Length: 203
Image 1 (cartoon, rainbow, N blue to C red):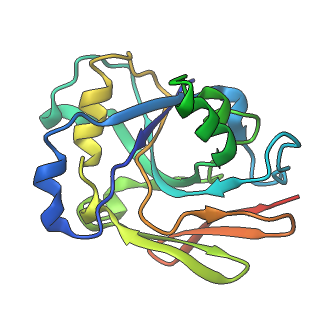
Image 2 (cartoon, rainbow, N blue to C red):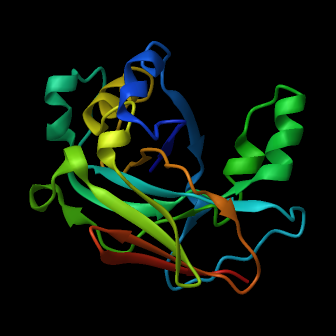
């Protein structure tokens, strides 16, 4: 399975969307080894002291497809979930200076916690789907999918031009403002429409 991620996909003001849509979506990937089960803690790697958390809406692909048109994209996923995109910011800055790929900063072990259970999309309003993240009980991120520059269906269609999507693939659809540095001992909790989806203990 593949983990495909979308960067820089949220605005704070919906009016900003059209200008930002003139550029293509930012795409990067994480290896399967980046997946973290909820029952496992996340250990901050010893080579970084600046790992950031980001909460994101996830889409799980239900069957194979490539070159998918946006109007048919909804047929390629049934379930939506929540995950955390962990980024080693100090490593990312080094890679950007050298104009190198982001893999080491984004794809390290445990850098992609994913909720244990997904929600049938028919139960949700994907055009205005609210989600949030708490750190030690304090809300740090709160937004909804109406602030996405590229919608879920547009993301599925765009990605499928370059990667054949296969059943079980997961797409991280981007994060809103509020991402921050995690510390040892933190408890991260992610919610969709107030329902807790994911908890990660930081070690």
